[in-house]
Length: 136
Image (cartoon, rainbow, N blue to C red):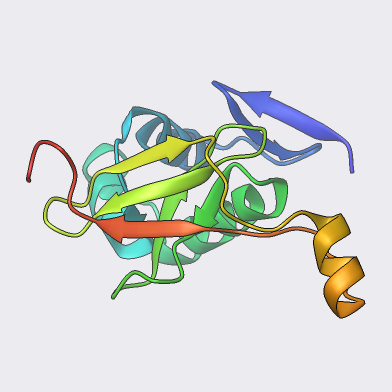
């Protein structure tokens, strides 16, 4: 897949960068912590009232395909978080919603999984939920 970079977010090449989509991308770049598509929609409508919810979902899906955002499976709402390239995991605060990336990894190596279980690992994801230092 050929890729396009916009302010550190990676999109599939030939993605149309409409004013509505640029408003969404700018919000994601400026945002800290997790977000839902509906929260993004509500914020973006202040900048671009003509923006449709379908555009938000399509844009988030394009970013998900390239790894620029990732869904948080353990969140109580359908939330996403912006991701930097490279191997990392997330520390998610249940009190304030802050998300911090960490390079620490507790997953067994692909070699161990193959040797013990005959399993060929392709990738893995790990999110750790708890309380951040500011909220502790």
